[in-house]
Amino acid sequence: MKPTLRPYQLEASDKICEAFFGNGLNRLLVKKPTGTGKTVWFASLPERIKTWFETFPKGQRGMLIIAHREELLDQAAEKILAANPGARIGIEQGDRYATQGCDVVIASIQTLSARKYTRLKRLLRENVFRLVIVDEAHHAAAASYRTTLVHLGFLPPADASEEENIEAPDYDDVLAMEQALADWDRRAPKDRLLIGVTATPNRTDAVGLSCVFQTLAFSYALKQAIDDQWLVPIVPWVVESKVDLDDVRITAGEFNQKDLAEAVNLDARNQSAVAAWQAHGKGRSTLAFTVDVAHAHALAEAFQQAGVRAEPLSGETPKDLRRAILRRFTAGEIEVITNCMVLTEGTDLPRTSCILHAKPTKSATLYEQMTGRGLRLFPGKADCNVIDIVDISRRHSLQGAPVLYGLPTGLLAHGKDLQATLDELAELKEQYPAMNIEALLQAKHMTLEQLRLQAKTFDIWAVPDMGELAVGRSLSWLKLSDQVYRLSYPWGQGKESLEVQSDLLGTWEIVTSLQDLTRGPFGKYPPPRTRRVATNITSADAALSLAETFVRQERSAVYRLKDITAPWRLKPATDKQLALLGKKRIPHNPKTITMGQASELIDLAFARRGAR
Image (cartoon, rainbow, N blue to C red; front, side, top):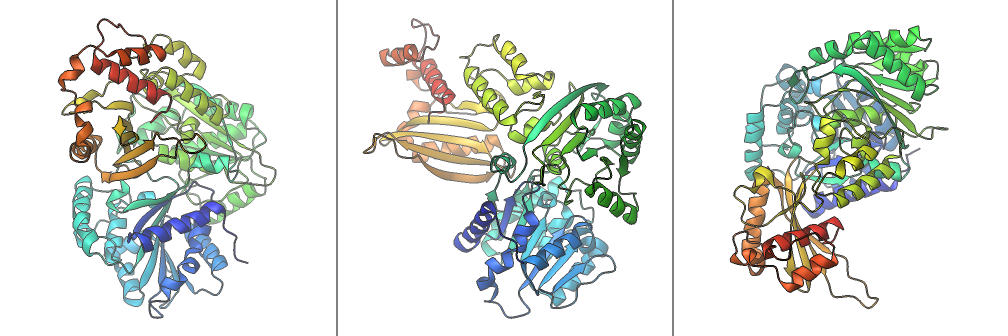
């Protein structure tokens, strides 16, 4: 029986068709949280695009699925067959070879890239792949993936490499790739479709996925999936340890694993983790994430000494024993699995209702992957307790459960509902916009109550500093956060905002939003009209410069209003400005405040209440 797709899965298919058939884009990224059925969804795509498939001769309608780990191949094959009864499915991995003429080939990237891509080249001699799926697509910036996509006709030959290291992109190579793509998109073949599927589109090493994908065609946020009740809610708990991580080296943006293991694999810390589980996770099927194999075994032993049924799991665990452990865990015979990088991707253990983070990480991507293992729906499961063992870290920003709701690292929720925490923090930010909450939380972990006490020392009407980005600017930008910068000005019959903001591909975009201030027949304003002026910009500085060029060329009538060198800015504030400052209760000295200063404070006031 074919699976029934959920509303967001149907919407994702619609967005794919719109981007491909409507906009001519054929390298598309889709973001869905762990546990929301990525494999079930892409298994349904051949049926959705069947009409397009049938425009090609038989034997030239192949689908290729590239998996990051060998363990995912059989799981994907089962779901593909369920969605496409009768399909001929081949697996290309190790001593298994896909036969010629398969409808679907599922292959591991390790197999495709081995021995200078000989297995991939053989597949391409025997098959024509029209639809290619890259599962766990946050890995796609690596040289092995990009070279594979060159052979498949999705990327320019300039990106071809003999590199087989599946986790080591070359930064210079990525830059060359992005430059080559600018010309490639004009001449690339459009008779094939690439879709990358991931729960976390940000790599741990900060290499953006724009070197592979043209656009994020569809995104379904983890928070939204929880709100829509397709995933269970998170209940966060924090246990602070006395371990100091400041001397742990950083490698490719993440903690050096050898240093980290030496720092955290301590008897006292492991016993503290067990005590935290007994307080907040007892009675729940639990996955604990550890730094390395030795840490997994040591933590499992600490659990066993406390009378808890626990087993370690790692890449060194024999496959038969691994299957037996997972089977016993699924049956409820094992309470805790302590694992080292085995259960971060592609493993379905919906019984899991507690995640124990014994492995500190700087990566939001990795943290979401690990936490997502506990959020799947399961009969009788109401929520998932997430326990973070938080170490001392003055130099490093550690990830915790609040980041999954867009909350800053270092914020302590302590069992509090994350949506309520998000709402309260938004109110605090509106009240104290000049306070650098992220910096405060990096220096010291705090609760919302502690942040409120800290906030009282700040001037709530200090205009946020642009920092280094102020250099070379011509216009008076308002910094809303490190990811959003705004200009607001009158335009037409209303008011327009121009925002420079970061996107999920690690690049920047320029977006306008025009609010018509002419009320409709029922006294309501029409919805704002948005427009993307530019996308895929490599840096905030470049995006701000391009946005200023847009204002100069497309909004020349208002350029003088935002020019930071305009003489009017030094003149005394107008009566109208002073009246508005008074109405908004904004502290100011009416005798000394200038028109420019008043304008900035008024913009800040409107931004604080979300006005455009």
